[in-house]
Image (tube, rainbow, N blue to C red; front, side, top):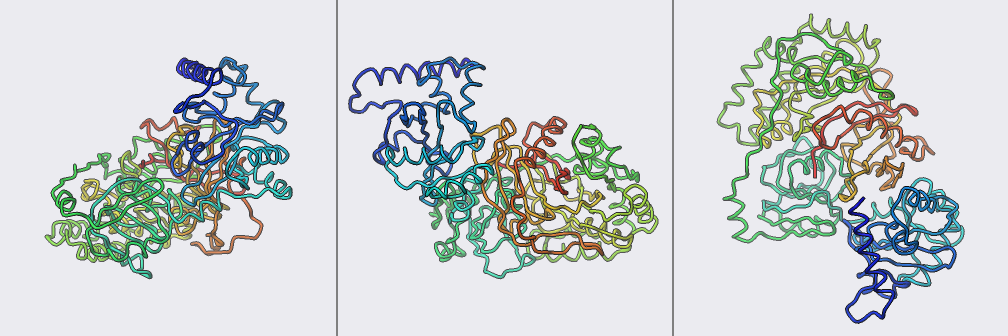
Length: 635
């Protein structure tokens, strides 16, 4: 508060000096009443991520408009209180100021001007929590036409409420542009900034996911969306969806440059197979042939080896613990995913809902391997001199997974597990999910490395799903990811979480940070799609994306889902793809976003690692369920 008061004092002094005497060449006023050209705009705006941002205020009594210097005044309130009203920054004055965000505004209209650099388009907008009505939007548009050098600016609604207002505004002749339209029209999107040198590998159109094989030092150009890839040095994609897809989360965790450019194949295809220099920035990227010096430096550079500490595994505990009996310390028996949910459940927090479930500990994975001689086969595979050859490793892992699935499961163990499903989970369809000791860790979340089997019904089917999860410990993507983080494969054990299946009407991911604006330390990023949640993280289609600020219930729309189909439970077990019913509309309404954020805020203190959280959730009607919580690993 003292710092803000000092900043305001300096700003006011600068402003009053500028107002009280003539402005000489080279000087800068703190505000102007018109922006007649681009040079003036550049002086009063600033670049935030991929946008060039300016702000304006309209005095409703005098109809004066003020374009203030956003490099000097961080928020509208600084300028209104410090310059226009000359009032102290007190709780009472702030409450009075905040009335200008209501539908009936006592003194001011508070607006934004944005040059969307990636698509070279302009808009005017208002804070997503502003309840501005259509008449005030039209009034702002009229004043901007008189005082701003860009004409015919469209109104950009930022919240669900403002989208409704936009319908009325459009009838009054004001053009509209949505964030969804801007997001989907962009030909370029940076997901992780950075620089890299490596060999460019252009993946041909039609390459199946199972056929992907990459070297750790490749820079890959992907022409289709894939649910996941193994570690590489850089990613450039011609199709892109969301920062929370598995591929983009991987790039963040690896700290590599990652971008989408719809024209990348045409621009850079000729560099296929060559060593390239690749750099990603917010609004542009660079790819060219690497110089001999850059290649030499990349070859000689020895990256500091990453090493992730895993909980010491307990392999002799056969107890099938319910989540209600599980705590974080039990991660060394049941895996981190189960233990994290158990910690949330046992905290008994009001309003937080987690589907009932229980853990199948490492004991049963080790039992399956030992009874079928698979532990010795794994040791031999890892010790083979050909292990470092990617093609050999891929084939060997395929054989190992098949052997794990084909081997008979211990019948007494399966009987015990199925009895618990019937007695404790009501015999309903269940999700059989991975819960290894090598996922959901600080510094290594392992998102998407291991397999999940949804809506499993019947004892035999549960046995096959258990073996499927155990086998996924040995997928190429999981093995290569662990190698990149210095994890010893011999110390990785496949735990399983069996959980009541929620036939979600919608599902998605929430991260307790704003992935689109690093200066915002309050807001959450939320993604969603209709139906079950697997499609959100696969990145196959653009999901619904919002930024939600729980401090004021502000909801900023980034994009709306463009997926015409969704996943639902099949009555006979498993899942099926069905069309999204017409007229479903918005998934993340303000009420749903608030209900979800409140649950996350309630259990966030349970986690003491200090990092943002990555939370998977499902919506059943209007009821929110939490199905996973782990540290977010990213920029």
